[in-house]
Length: 335
Ligand SMILES: Cc1cc2ncn([C@H]3O[C@H](COP(=O)(O)O)[C@@H](O)[C@H]3O)c2cc1C
Ligand SMILES: O=C(O)c1cccnc1
Image 1: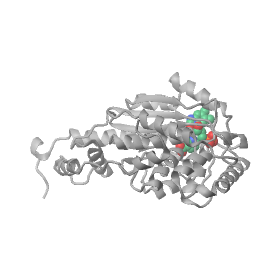
Image 2 (image 1 turned 135 degrees about the horizontal axis):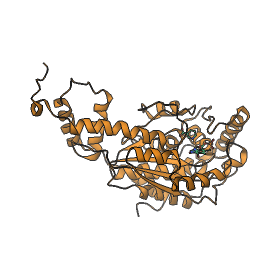
Image 3 (image 1 turned 45 degrees about the vertical axis):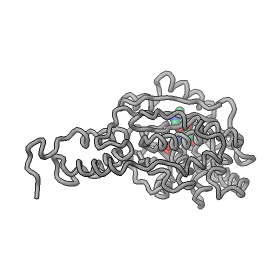
Image 4 (image 1 turned 180 degrees about the vertical axis):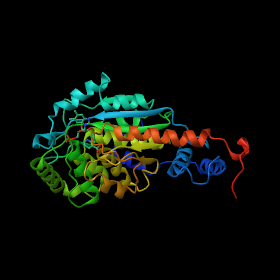
């Protein structure tokens, strides 16, 4: 069992592995010998070297990615914070099982294994404006579920989510971790009144839990949700197995931010897959120091933007690991 308490989870954050410096040096040397002008593959080159470091090899792979979707329900939906009813969470889980969602198509397109974990959907977390969303035992259970959902043999990992109301939860987390206002966005498409209700819920949640705002793991417990905590656990699980991670949109990044605020550098094995259309995602990525790979106007979640970015990393490692060197190809090197 990796951890049984929040204190043990916190301890694990202090024991995270670093990337393999030898593999980084070897991949950097290899990159310099490939049949292209230096730097001609742009950011793809740094991405391939980054993958090499985490995988511990100068020829990284990305042909066996894993996507895991965590689903959770939220008591705060009683405050009218989503354009859709809470039943949609369980209905979408059925849709995932039948292969009908966007993420099913993207997983297939990029050859990813897709797992779905429904987390106590018939028992929503408590409304965080009234009480802590989860007890310590509840948050630890889902952190562990996430941690253990990672296949350590995967070449890449994507954490996705489904949970009506969770853009409000993510906004509350971001506000608690970083301060300021305006973290709420339109999510599934709320109108101005809905947006005002979201902002009010975030403000009420922060006021209610003011005593814990300086402790990111308590922030996760009091203001988070099961699928969000599971994503945080999975991102740490991937780190312990040195599996590189692609972050999805606003909600996934809010989950990731809990780890980064708790232990700076906790997301060194993560790249930002995309810039979501959810208003504050860009601001959150700036706080995380991450430059998104794609910007396609997506505002879906389910890991969809990160899944699309699998293609970018597959391209990067295909070139890095498959290209000939100048010597191998008998191509004259530049001077
Ligand atoms: C049919 C449908 C499929 C989805 N897939 C992801 N989400 C996304 O929308 C939800 C967050 O938005 P809000 O906070 O406004 O409820 C999450 O479930 C997220 O994964 C969906 C939402 C709907 C309606
Ligand atoms: O950025 C996201 O991940 C997002 C935005 C809106 C709705 N669901 C997810």
